[in-house]
Amino acid sequence: MAADDGWSNVATSVASSTSASARRSNRPQLDIPEYVLLLWRAKWAIILIALPILALAILFAFMLPVKYAATSRVQVTLGNERVFAPLTTGADAQSANLGQEEITGSEIELIYSPVIFDRVLQEIGMDIIYPADYEAMMEAPEEDRPLLYERTLLGFQKDFAAGAAPKNPVIRTSYEHEDPVVAARVLNAIVQTYLEYRSELFLDDDDGVLSQQRETLAEELSAADAAIERFLVDNRIGDFDTEKESVASLYGAVTDSLFNVQAQRSEVQGRLASLTAQLALTEPTIDLYVETNYQQQLLDLQIERESLLSTYLPGTPQIDAIDRRIQNVQNLISSQGDGVGVIRRGPNEVFQRLDQQRAELEAEASALQTRFEELRRQKNEIEERQLRLTRLEPRYQELLRDHSILENQLRNLTVREGDERLIREVSRANLDNIQILEPARPPAQGKSMRLLVAAAGLLFGGFTGLIVAMIWIFSKNTMPTAACASRTVGLPVLASVRRV
Image 1 (tube, one colour):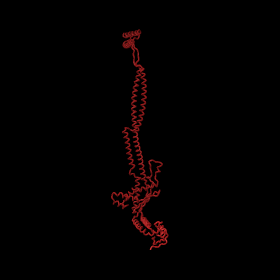
Image 2: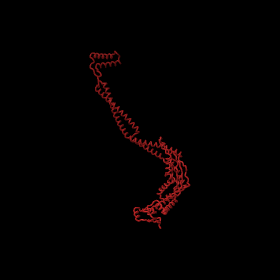
Image 3: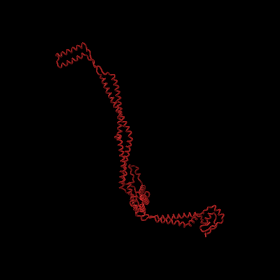
Image 4: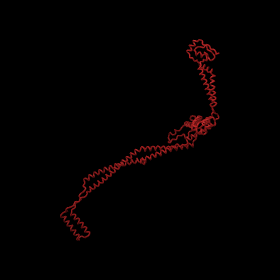
């Protein structure tokens, strides 16, 4: 089998070679030195492949611009705006304060806000910071400009860097640009805009969020008051709690009066029954006295004599005549007795007294019955009123609960608004926890990726050439040395000659 080093290998036994080839693979058996030898023989092919790639990499590296990185340092410490001020004080109030590492991390996140970069881009001008992007945006259609602007803003953020060491209050910022003056100007603008934006977030109250919420709650509270008033007016209630208490007290008073009247009525009815039984056993009239005719005549004559004495003196004929008549009647009574008399009957005073008491008791019983019915009617009305108030109470309590919640929220929000206003005033007067330790200055030396790109091109070219050479080696059945031929065919090589 021929070799590429200019020597020809001769086999001594054809039969042995044929049987060994049947047992061996058709591929050459190469070891590491032989691979190196083949790669060395393919060195010019590797160089031819690597040189164009290296040339392109060097050309691209020289096309890369030199960027100047302006740097600045900002110190951040704990300020009043970072102190948690709860509405109620307690033992856990201080535990809510952020540590230095958390404060620094939050400030770094804040300085990366797109709002800051958008303001800087608007302030300095996109045509100054990124003139190529500005020209492309101006040449693009109107509907594509917002997207191109956002892409430029995203590239602006990537050119900026900010970071701090753990538990270090100093934030290091940097910005890269092709112009060192623009780099320093833009970085200073970013830091200043960050301070202004931070002041707006923590101190300014232009948005009036708390005031708007307070006004909204005040309107909702007024609506709740109107709902309660409308509820009371529709149900003809002055004050629900007072009405409920008055109805309860009135119900108790009416119930007590009803029981008293019922007891009095029972008492009167008992007395009336007893009195009626007594009247049934009592005569309405009784005999007063018995009056005779002689006695009446004697009485009349005596009365007449007394009348005449007022006119005549005793011993006069008139007086003597009346005296004789009186004497005759007296003699008659003495001889015949009283004679036939007249019995006089009159009303029984006991019966009359009992009858009067009965009439009074009947009147009292009637009055008590009327009073009892009226009290029972009032009690029914009060019970209906209580039942109606019981049905209305859940709705009234719901209205009161909503009103109480809104009132408490408005009170707490008003207190919170006052506290926030006080905190802003104090923080605005003592805003010294952010200090610019080192403003940005135009850098004297720039950085470029040229050397790195050229080295990467060289490595890539060499690797590509090496891969191509390896593919070429494995695609050929070349045995570079006699040892390789012996391993491949399984027979010793007796001699080799250089290719003529």
